[in-house]
Length: 136
Image (cartoon, rainbow, N blue to C red; front, side, top):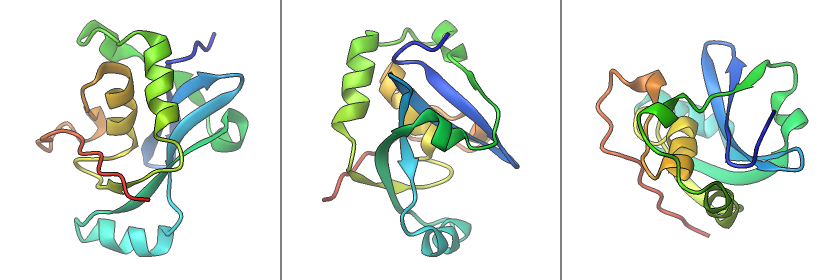
């Protein structure tokens, strides 16, 4: 059963998308308003802007399967769950740099839950940590 503060892992074709469950059927996650330009930048190893948004879990899932994935709880103690939700909701509407290797949706989700940005999807690439530089 989903609890506020849980990490949700969505199975997409070729990768996983990550969110923070904030309760009442909603998640906070990265969205990509300028997707086409961003994809070109990402393929060149550059950053592009992602937006932190709150959306209905069903809308984010679409036809993807998803599951709670708090497996890093064994490695990092989670922050108090009300604090996790508050942190995620505080960033709603903000823009942040997105970089596949150093600042992706999994980095964002783990930063919210643990205070440490970690992405097992890109664990072969050294990650100096998530740098959330917000711009209006």
